[in-house]
Length: 117
View: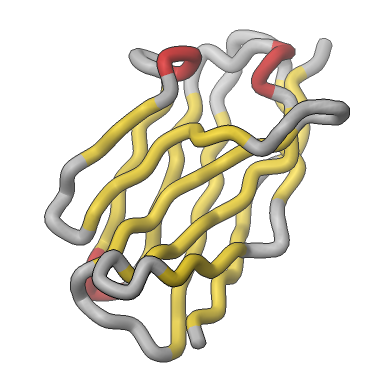
């Protein structure tokens, strides 16, 4: 089992910046992928950004150039730095951890990000 604890999020004005972090603990194997998904009211959960334990990243088109994902392997943490935030970025942001070989996913409890003036 892997436990995920998220932090960060909150309320920010359009154009502002915010970061969310996630710390993983438990039975962690080195070959894994961590990432952030988001779900806005009435919409499906969607990928925001992911990063592998080797450092390869992928981003949703909607956030490219504005969001940056990074991780600290020694601490099993992942951080999403969000800049130039827009109202449409408002959502609950969920951390996801995947053991790549087994394909098993673990999810955090979610943290609210609200972009509003």
